[in-house]
Structures are given as C-alpha cells and as structure tokens.
Picture (cartoon, rainbow, N blue to C red):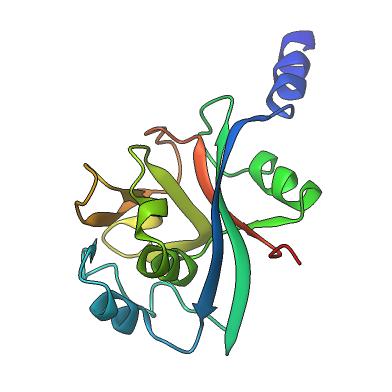
Amino acid sequence: MAIASKQKSQKSRLQPVQILDFGEVVVNYDETIDQKLAANPRALWDRQFATDKLFPCTRKGKATYSASMVVFDELIYSLDNDVKKWCEKNKKKLSCPKEALDLARQNPIAVATPRIFWISGQIGEDPSLGQFELVCRCPAPGASFLFSPVMAIGHAINRRCYLVLGKPPK
C-alpha cells in the first residue's frame, strides 16, 4: 500500500523542464477545420480525421492567446489530471485543433520544432480508431507540418510536450 501511495504522490509532481514561447495567436473559431487547412498548404492532415464533426467547436468569433509548448519532466500516458492541474494552476489551457492550425498558419516557425507536440485540448472519437488525440510533427525545417491522430490512452510517443494557450501579455 505504501508503494502505490508513493507512486501516486510522485506522479502528481509533474514539472515542466522547458517552456517554449511561440508568441500570440489569433484564433478564428468561425472558420472550419477544412478552411484552415486550405489556407495553409504546409499543414497536412489525414482528411478522414480533419473534420469539425470529430472536433466540434462551440466557440464563436475570434480570440487572442499567448501560445507555448510545455515540455514536462516525464512521459505522460494519459491526460488524467496532472497536465490539466498544471494548466489550471498556471492559467493555461490545452490547445484544440482549430487553435493549433491557426498557430501553424500565423507562426510556421513555432510548429517547425523537431519535437512532437500534443494537441490535447479536445479528444476526437472515430468508430474505426476509438478515442484519439492529435500530434504535430515537422520532420525538417521548411517541411510541412503533419497533424496526425494517435490513440488517446496508453501511447507514450514523446508524450511530454503539449501545446498550451494563455492570456496574451498586456
């Protein structure tokens, strides 16, 4: 019993080891995912998973955020509560697909990182894949950004980097 308790307390001490500031991003929630992809030829996405049906968004209008990638000190196998708690404590939110696509269009250098980062603010659901999250990969500077689905639970493909949004500095 003491071992399980110790593991749980260690897990709750998730800490960032690096935060990369990407600057401000203006998100247009009224554009569809398809429109966002059409506006940025460098953003590639399997069209089976690039739908507003799989990633419905209830927000309307435009919003400005400060975007950053947070690199945590350990692999995270599911979003349980640690990443969400860190976001709440630091007044951040996990990015959704529309937000990540607008960042890729407005600041392509930001997403041209050699790291894989997770877009976990919204979980997609597809009958053939189950629940999934999106990851963004950019294989080389100047290359296209590949947004691809990965099963939401149990995979740890460099699952320590997350795209997060906060209030822009005044």
